[in-house]
Image (cartoon, rainbow over all chains, first blue to last red; front, side):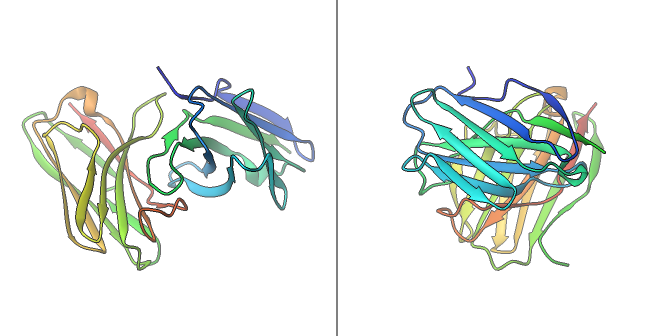
Length: 113
Length: 113
């Protein structure tokens, strides 16, 4: 059974609007979360992280929100740009000091010009 | 060349063949990883090396054999694979095993026939 779930395999958003990518997890011990972005024919690149002591982390157009009680995190991209079109993976760990991250299956975002 | 480089980009092999995947990083990182990404499945951690010592073997079958001759190079030796081993194999590196900002290579797309 998957511990980290990205239930929307794909999402289309108009350029300039907000993109919201969701991620749910089942393990209440998870306390550190990452988002990666992957373009076709390239490896994933690290985007943004959040620890459980926060409920929000912002980096430019990217903001990650964490709702621990709901075991849910989301990545907001505002405004969305065509260059944001990629697959986005969330990952979670119960031990932020190690490499033991569990990844979701990814959501393919398409930003329409 | 900078970043993490993987060769070959594509590989087709028979079930009785022996082949090797190569990964090289010029980032001065001390930790290197092999991940497997099967279709519609999450990234799965296979092996972790820290300072050329293997620190994790994530229940990977013995037909996959990693080798880390130095901190810049990582190999994955393959022999007598099964068709279900067909996947994208990603190499990554990080400053050390506590760091989460992995740098991934572009991957080797492996097809076992």
